[in-house]
Length: 318
Image (cartoon, rainbow, N blue to C red; front, side):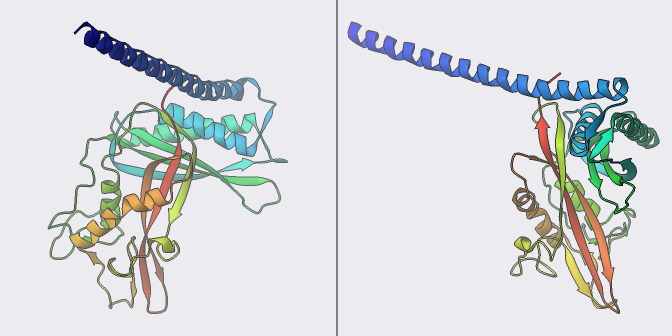
């Protein structure tokens, strides 16, 4: 009996030792992660100080885009919130790039302008709880010899909300495809909404946020039916046979009213689409659903485009 107790004791001691080692390793790993992420946050805070104190200096354009975008997300979109309905705001500012460099003076002006724009959006919302979900900056070429380029700014904002994850469309959810035309199929009302707005809302309900943080290195990837052929599904998809809404025909030839079955099909394919397009080492953040049409001579093509946003999630830091 003593031998049995002895062996049980050895086993328990071994288990405790293993658990203790695993805990120590986990704590070391967490401490290292905290230091690395805190380092990024401090880099962005130092960048903000330099904007105002080192006015004569310049920064490489790609680095400037990363730092300015990261700082704006840190200050404007540092949250641990779920959002239901969100609004997407787009603006284009002019930035001068000389020999691949942008002056800190100009970056400071851009920083001030974007913050003022965000404050105006919050004020116009009429709700003090209105906040931002993500900030995306893209420097685009203009073709001008003067060195001027476009800084395309996207702000996504809304009110905190608790929703149901991919709650299916119901029996009365017949929606016109776009342009805020509201309901259809014998149902009326909800002007200002349409199939694209309702899909966007359900795609986002909810986005589980594991902890407070913000995003850096944000990228936007557009998914267009007919171009992204990996999302063709001719055997199952309604209309043009793609996992995103696409329908064409003459002016009076096709119905623009999407049924609950149609919408639930598109809803069921969203995770596959967003995961397929997910860049390495980035995390999905949000989506904007765009409705657009391409008119021809007696022919129309109506489609939905998904603008997917991914980034590097910074979950720790001060």
